[in-house]
Image (cartoon, rainbow, N blue to C red; front, side):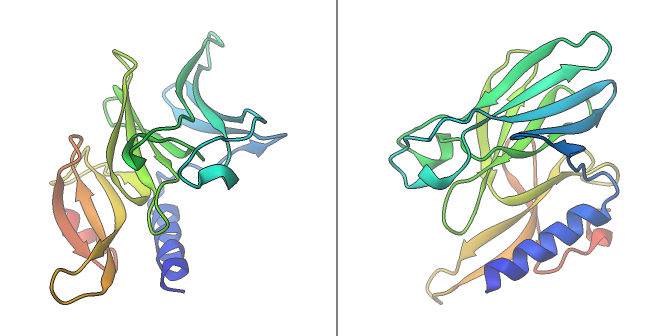
Amino acid sequence: MKTIIILIVASAFLSSCGEAQSPKADNGGVSQIHAGGGFTFLIRDTGQPLSMGSGNGDNTNNELWLINDSTGDKRLLAACKDAQEMENEICDIESPQFSLDKSRVYFESSAWATSGAIHVVDLKNGKEKYLCPGNGLQVIGSGKYKGDIVTSMHKYRGGEGGSYDHFFVVGPDGKELKDLGEELDKSKLH
């Protein structure tokens, strides 16, 4: 139940940011998301089953493409892949967003039972890498943390036991910069 509440709060946060991007259409497993700056993200379901050993077999085997709106040129940014470590596995790609300088694209992938994984693609060299665990993401557009991202993370208490979910500011290198708490207070970003 707590996970559902966290997802609702994260969804409300992303919707309230004004920069959150939502699909234009969902047509046969294809979603187009206007990315701004003359680009569109395309998330395409390959229609192929996943054969991943981690239990992600029920997730969507999809690909993330970047389309130049002027030329129609398409570039594959990320595709689902199996890996020994959950950090390196990709499936159920969603929520792509440009970094503020448009040199990177962040996206979320399904991962653990309690959390997704945030990945980033460097557009200069085409390399994708795991950034951090997280549910939902938003690139911060202004203030002290301009260019960093906000995501909700599931954490475990040390000796106390139990777990909690907080929003965190995360840098482009994956380093946690600030714990924003259970509820997102945008004033903490300035």
